[in-house]
Length: 151
Image (cartoon, rainbow, N blue to C red; front, side, top):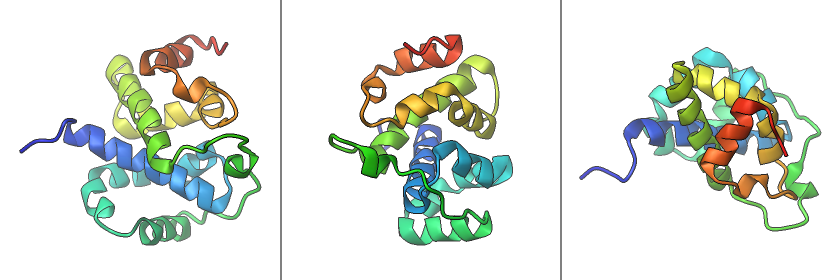
């Protein structure tokens, strides 16, 4: 029986959730984690997401932190949050929708779409848990990405 979403959507969801998990664990910005992982590793994470997803996320994240030499940062949006903090899975879902929209509308592969999403100014807004942008509709988030109009 097939799930509600495509395998591709689930794979991107896992990759985005893993980026958020690593970022929280190492206190780095999400874009810095995505850049450190790089296009090739991101492609591998997406391709093997079903395998990685069945393993312990701490072990998976530790492996990629070591492999990509991701050091400890000083960005802690979780500690800075004054309100309820969304889980890494919740944030992964927001980024997944943006990444899939970018891939579809810009005709780029998934690792490139993922990097474009994290490199964009909307990433800063999504990761601000004291703001409301995170809760905007997927279409509004993509429109802000596409137009650069962030207000």
